[in-house]
Length: 150
Length: 150
Image 1 (cartoon, chains in turn brown, purple):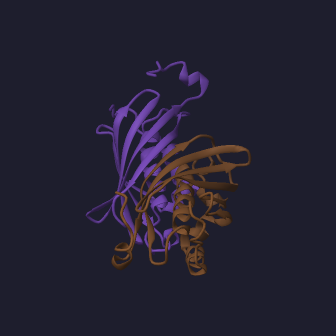
Image 2 (image 1 turned 120 degrees about the vertical axis):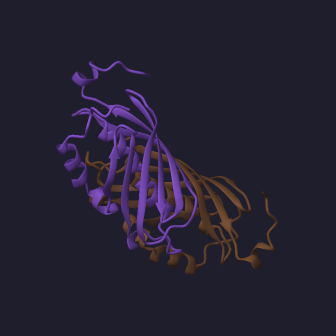
Image 3 (image 1 turned 45 degrees about the horizontal axis):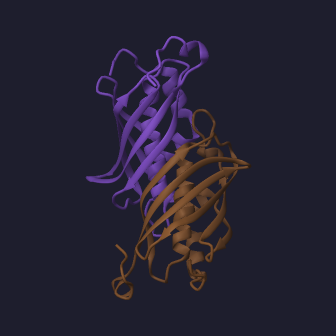
């Protein structure tokens, strides 16, 4: 993982302005491009509760989709973006209304395909985990400068 | 699939009152217990948009979690509930703000473990699909009456 490609301020601003960011109440806590890791927190809102008054698992999945995609996006050159192809999620423990912590790390950072692990914690409990497969999409002119890995 | 176990009115009312139901704007269109299928629709809200102004994939996953769990729940005896263990989601096409249609069907309806397929459509386009593994949880007294399959 190279640290020489910090996310431009415009990218961070774009991510922060997205409606889904507000819905999930996501805040970036720590981004380490050298290690290829991201830590965020989410607001587990009352609006996310299922009939059992737990945070619906699918909303934990939305958080996992977010934290994994933001990590990939933070490593991209301007103009490129991350398209998630699949998200395989395991639900490990119930989560209640309140703060949830998200973590993402690269399993493999290819030029075009990234495999990313995500975790959602509530306090000391790992409540959900996921494996995301993400594709890097580039404008045509930018793509010509990158040697595809697949 | 037996049709002799229709969802009690209280169960439907409970599902409809859940905050996540309101957030996703989910309405049940057709439930066929004989065929083991469910059709619903969701409101793809502006609040679900990612930075590209598409519906965030994770929110399509939340819809897939919902439609698959509601199908399982609709087949359960009073007091039992559905706990989703995993949701493996593929994102197939971008979806925009507007109505999304959800479908669920049983791949296998075990006594304790259900394998359920889910699809999200926007118009004629299949935008996301998932395979859910769901566990049926029962109160202790009800569980004694059911022979476990796993």
